[in-house]
Length: 379
Ligand code: PMP
Ligand code: GLN
Image 1 (tube, rainbow, N blue to C red):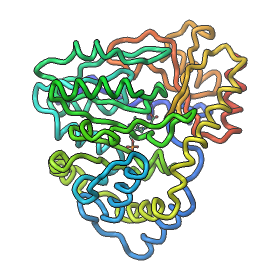
Image 2: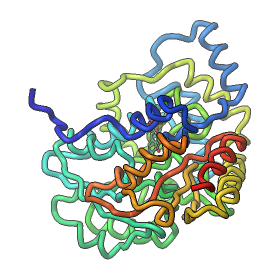
Image 3: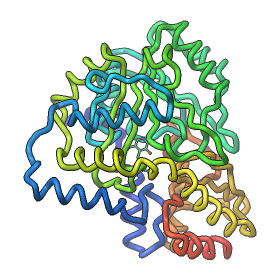
Image 4: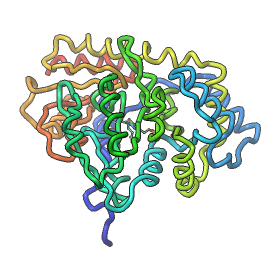
């Protein structure tokens, strides 16, 4: 059998969580909350299932959820979104990313991706017959040099994928980044896929610079988010894509043959949640900032160097003063011998990276974070 993805193995998230379970380690590797989804959300899901709301929804989503998503975009980013035409509900951001990439990328097209990159982008680009052009960003700043990006653009370039707040670095794009990005997208007639799944998790009073804030940039964009991050419900696999109507039409052609529609009872429950407890979204940044600070403070006297986290629920540690192992070996050692599971950063790079950096997920109870930090402080 000739594989279409010969170099692809099992995702690092599955691998590390399996090792964490095997060695009964504290699992700060795969990004998922230790705490539960809000009571109202669970109650409403239960309600709709028991009420018999169990059949297909319209392919692009339950209208009242589309409307709630559009309203949220208006409240947060002053965006005027046409719910019926521009919002498509998907089975997680992963589906939305896959579909947007299939809609955009043609045989031979190039897509600019910033490494360290979320692991689902590359296979989706390859399956579409495209090629990723990976621009590596490095610790500690993970800053984008827009001159380098400009130099990577040629007649085959079709799109750029950005992710802000960024997994795994925790970095957020600033206004000067958005300005530089917009200039390139418009000048070269490119499209943008903006992965904003951590949009409601930004720290130190920084606003999230959604592409939805900028009409000209949005006109060429697929903006993707996930309810998994926002409502502590990663297992529900519910997300969405907001795109201008002409792009949404193309997106929906593919979405209807990937899943057709997403889990109907969850769509109603999410609509209720947004309608009745919108404040949950507004409280998320403060909630996670406190977690970031608990973990950072507890690691202050360790030999790890803590890198800045401006958003997401991830914290990077430089372990140069702790071990000479490469990051994959170090994470293997850490889970087996020390009992803490983390993610090595090099797996998010296409070209080999020698940075000695690991990622910890702090979407955990304080007791778990303190227990992990106590172990890490002894290394
Ligand atoms: N993009 C990024 C950057 C992510 O971290 C995640 C979640 N791991 C996703 C996309 C996928 O989100 P979902 O679980 O909703 O498919
Ligand atoms: N997004 C999560 C992370 O970065 C994992 C998602 C997955 O397991 N595919 O850890």
